Length: 106
Image (cartoon, rainbow, N blue to C red; front, top):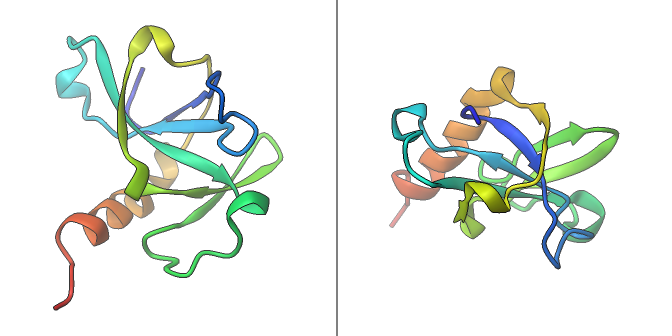
């Protein structure tokens, strides 16, 4: 499981949140958990109010929106199979996390 790999969600919210993207650095691969951000169907979430915080992607024909406010840690065993990678979009994902964590405006 590499950073920016996309995994299928097998949980109860899988209809609205079909995928997760791994954002955890590979430096922490020895741990049994992965930090992931949900990829929510755009049809379930609407047009993002903050495009920098919520970039959109197309995964297996499904338009999805990154939801970093719902970041979570999941056991590796609970992640579904890898279905794609967003490695080429890594800068957009990191910019969204940076927006959430360090660019707060007062």
